[in-house]
Length: 231
Image 1 (cartoon, rainbow, N blue to C red):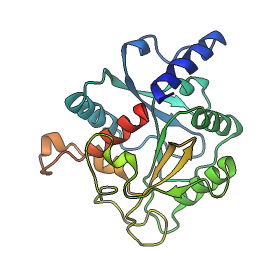
Image 2: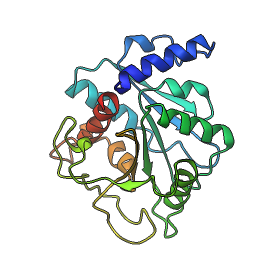
Image 3: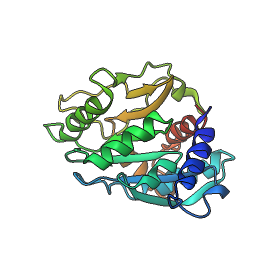
Image 4: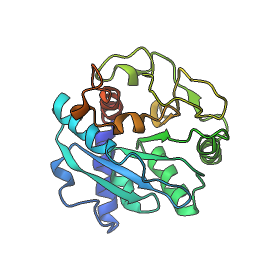
């Protein structure tokens, strides 16, 4: 069962339990962008980024893409219906019981969460607190480095490992630029992709109007989405 089948099955199950659907037109789209709110931190970052990713998916793929960003609380059961979730911030990550329960249920059921660290302070607060949350939910060894030939790097475009950004200052509080991403794999599929590279800030830039890059910097975002939908 790939993630599209997971989504259909989970949506049916939630509907049977009288859970209000994410949005009425969800059946008309293969993909919609869901940003997760959480109580402990500043989740509303890089506000142009979702629109840039949506535009790239429309340009490069044949997916039926919802043109709107959807924002849901992590504690809201409707997030369980999303084909892809995004979570980010600069500050403390400390889930409340409802947030923790939904995050675990979503990932263990086949969902995909892309988590991007926007924090470049010396203490690496977002990174440390998020990894502590993941260890609490999935176990201390669940978060692992992704190998450079992980399928996510070839799911649409081809990359030799994670692309660098202009914002890799201090994501883990160690003053190093890391040449890897991390993730949590459930039943052979990546369920949590974790980046300290601040891709959100990179993709937030209005590159289509400024034309400062020779190539679309959101191409790796297309890979992430395609992996999330098909793995």
